Length: 56
Ligand SMILES: [Zn+2]
Image (cartoon, rainbow, N blue to C red; front, side, top):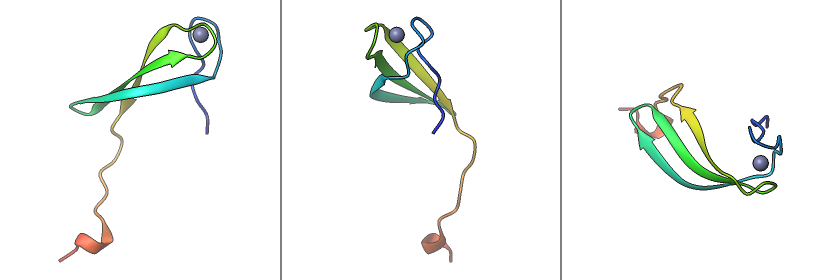
């Protein structure tokens, strides 16, 4: 899967920690495995899918 490299050093070895949901955004605290900087990964909700087994 494609990922965004560290904006500081360009490394893609990012370690992810706690995720906070804010509205349609998910923000994950991360640490770069190369330069050790603290980063926030930001994800946006893109879909809402109805699960098969929940259909009436
Ligand atoms: Zn880095």
